[in-house]
Image 1 (cartoon, one colour):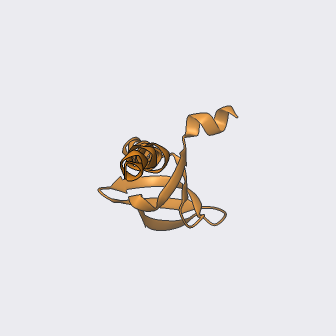
Image 2 (tube, one colour):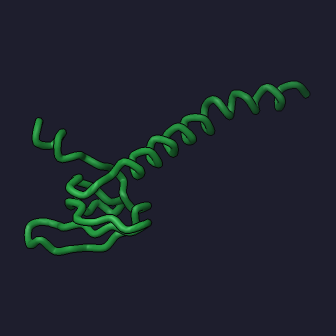
Image 3 (spheres, rainbow, N blue to C red):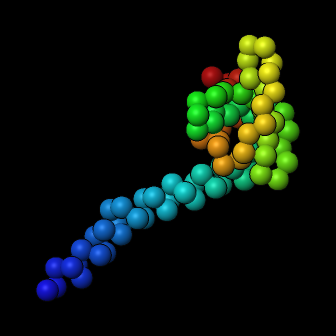
Length: 87
């Protein structure tokens, strides 16, 4: 009878807390993006941010310089210009 009560904290520490931490890091990443950053969308499209408006951004995709409008929530990762030119 005590076992279910002990499983709740373990479940929180193993499953819920790490997900909350990843969500917080992702929100901070989205809050710090700016024009010129290289991004990868959740669909795998890579491009450079040209402009940001509220919850939408315009990215330029190589090789033809096609401009795409994507939702901020679709951004999976960001590589800033400084870190990409340094490596």
